[in-house]
Amino acid sequence: MKTKKIEIGSNVYDINVKTATSDEIKELQHELYINRIIIVKNQHLTEQDYVDFAGRFGFPEPYLQSHYNHPDFPLIFVSSNVKQAGRQIGVARTGGYWHSDTAFEKNPKIITMLMPKVLPQTVTRTTRFIDMSAVYKALPESIIEQIEGESFIHSGRYRYKIRPEDAGLDIAEMLELIDHYQPPVHHPAIIEHPVTGEKIIYGSRGFTIGITNKSLDESHNILNEIFDFAESNDFVKEVIWEMGDLIIWDNRFLVHSSGRKKAPSDNIHEAVTKEEETMMYRITMKDAYPLHANKERVMAEENVF
Image (cartoon, rainbow, N blue to C red; front, side):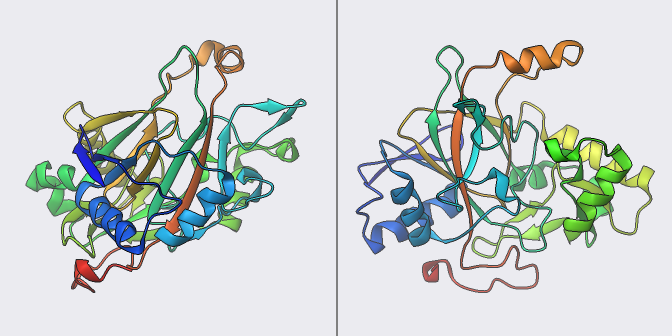
């Protein structure tokens, strides 16, 4: 197995995940925690291959809304605007905002694995990332003092994809429905990585909606200050996709956003219908550690899995 550092994370070569040994998988896990993100190159996997590897790498779990998932492989979340026989496959236009996958859950999925199935022909498909441990190190002390020991409140309420059966509900009813099935959750604003011991701002503009023990206005101001700082060119890094890539990242460290161009508000429906076909397969999973270990690290890195 060979690795090469890139703008964020590392590319990994000369490994076939279908036949990878236990030692090679442990080496991949080590690379992940050190580099935040790994891109395993030249992988050509069936759906079953993909699911099998996920089960060896971590502890995969299906997404909470089943209509996002592959009909035959429910562990696979399908992000796609592709239609077959007039029928939508998966859910279109997911993840076009800064977020950490499933942070709105009580026990978030820690590891995300993504594999392209269809890439646009004329537009480069990318994903943008921000390392929130780097943001923590660079934030002014005055901001850190305002969130030290506090919790962020997370919810997916503003990123819910409207379905045909939601027709007739007003926005307030929609928000009540979302909160009924997935109530807002609290996680520490600053977490300590259970393997590396690094401190990380665990929040994103997409899913973080407030700060415990602070007013709405105060929360809004502090969060905007943090996210405006984090989303600057100093921290945003971009990964360009190629067929055969298998990208794996640690959601503790990274927030991410689809690199697609934002559709104009005054003509959004027409712009969306003209977007080129794209399809990504995603699997999210737990690893051997909790989300954070703020009091003490629970294991040495060499004991991962």
